[in-house]
Length: 289
Image 1: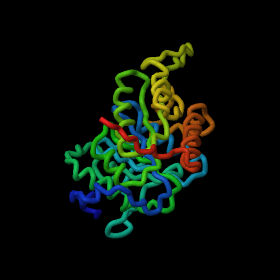
Image 2: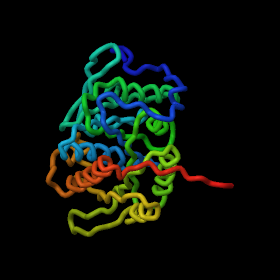
Image 3: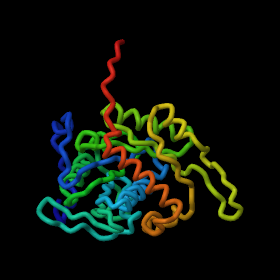
Image 4: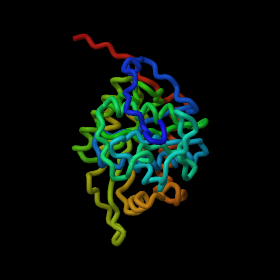
């Protein structure tokens, strides 16, 4: 990375993609991915508030925005400007609310369209993983783009993932894609740390009537049927939306509020699974056809 061209367009060595054991990320103890099969389910907002939840637990936390085509963590954290360059190939992450943040959004114009093919996406993600001075993090949260493409496979092969969290709304059309995300991580032997049901219900601020706009309980049922930990549900709430748009995430500005307690509780459950070894890779399964 240099000041004129922040992200190299040179694709990484494709042989490195085939390694069976990912090397550690300098300065990072544990890496987790937050994923969804479908866009628009609130994955980035969830990633942001989970990272703040880890920080609220006293953990040294960072977040990497791996959504090259639609970065949003710089907006969610209310950060502007460019990261400092520490050397010819090293950047200092930005920081706010006690969380270190790195996003391609810092390195491009806000309205720029990223017209990149797979190898360039892989190169950018690899550089943001390994050419950023994370500086002794307990946990790095990676906000993945929707789907099961290059970015997801790059993280599975290039980073020593402790596990993945799947975010979905309760409706069937979102859960179909969530199943694809679960299947992808299972194929590459990445443990699923849990499933989160986002936009679970809407409580009218006027009459307090609760309406399950996208249905309710679908993610819990899916998690139970697959033997995956169910981390809980987050409602469709105007305050979460407004604080996210303002760059003042709900966990940062109202750490004692009901929504923040949900996120912090999820972060605590995830961290416990990591440090106790409950998040284990499943043993290989032999299938005779």
